[in-house]
Image (cartoon, rainbow, N blue to C red; front, side, top):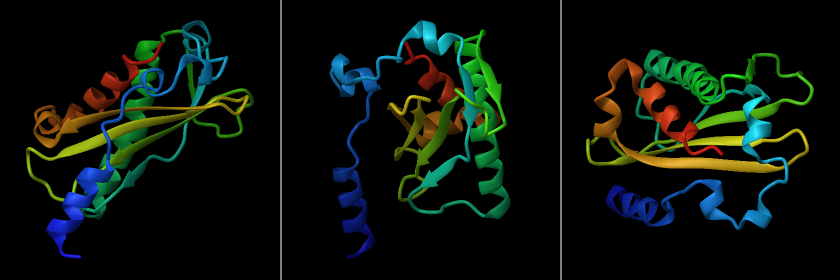
Length: 158
């Protein structure tokens, strides 16, 4: 396939992701998925992931991954001041969080990336929150780009 066909295929296969509440009926959400529970939970931020074409070089990619880990945890803490953010992956009863960025096919301002938080509750339930952003919107926040993106996702939590 040529690059244009791949780009078109990616655009057709990547649906606009909404919050888990909008994606699934309330009955399909884990019972523990409540604002009260999330407000006092312990969160462990696992290794962030970038999915899609690798458009960044070594140190730039490392910087983005570091910002994803740090700023996703900070966004959760701002949303839920009573929550605890832990770095210990062995923390019992913690909600596991994986920050994910689905990258576009090129670094063009009108193309979109999808930011996602994949949360796994200690009981085993899983919820994904995702939102699309144009590269231009993200670029305008420069050093605060990951903060901006993950704050937007945190606002979608109950």
